[in-house]
Length: 234
Ligand code: HEM
Image (cartoon, rainbow, N blue to C red; front, side, top):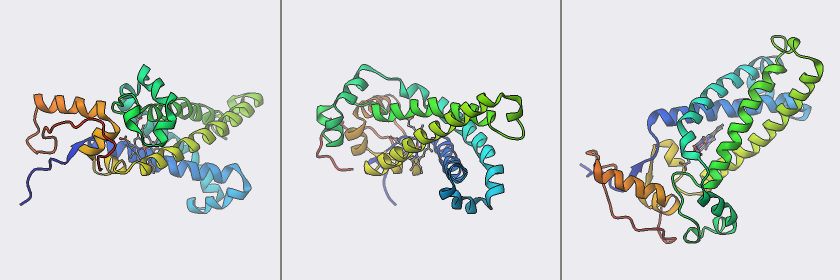
């Protein structure tokens, strides 16, 4: 029988992970169906949705599903993404970020400034995609709007889609680039070394919580905090 797991701590509960993956899957379907409709050279993506007609029918409904799932996710994580003075300092030291010199950066809490900026980019673009998508949704809603409004909405829709698709590519790249991050969204846990290295402010807070309320499963058992060291392994 194996002993209690003292190496890992909880970062996401099952509901948060399910909410994230529903958002991610609907987003990917939405992006591919949207790109198929955007340009003839990408029309071949429509074969994954049962042809052009089905792509055109499904895309707005996928949009509604993604918006609803994203809204729940945004409400869950809203309060973790407030921008602080330390976040501004972190962004100004982006050179140290890309060189993995965490010891030169302000202490990072649950999310770093890059993650927070992406969060607010999602907040700006996803509701805009919904509103503009409804304005251009034929035959149901578009007839209620003037042609100039439909043209402007189509332009804004494509612009926001471009920004958020690029943003999500960066999000996926960052999740894979920082070893041990994807596990947070797959299993819900991260190693203590990962937490101490990449999110020391959050890890210290978790240690204080564990002292008050130790977890009998052993998953969150208190352990000494070793500070921000670049030599720690994940
Ligand atoms: C295959 C695609 C995706 C992968 C591999 C992925 C991976 C991850 C991982 C590993 C985390 C945890 C990061 C951490 O705890 O530090 C995370 C967080 C998050 N993801 Fe994704 N993700 C994907 C797609 C998406 C999409 C499409 C959205 C929204 C449209 C999204 C929204 C979020 C949000 C809001 C968080 C919490 C971070 C915050 O609040 O700032 N993800 N993702």
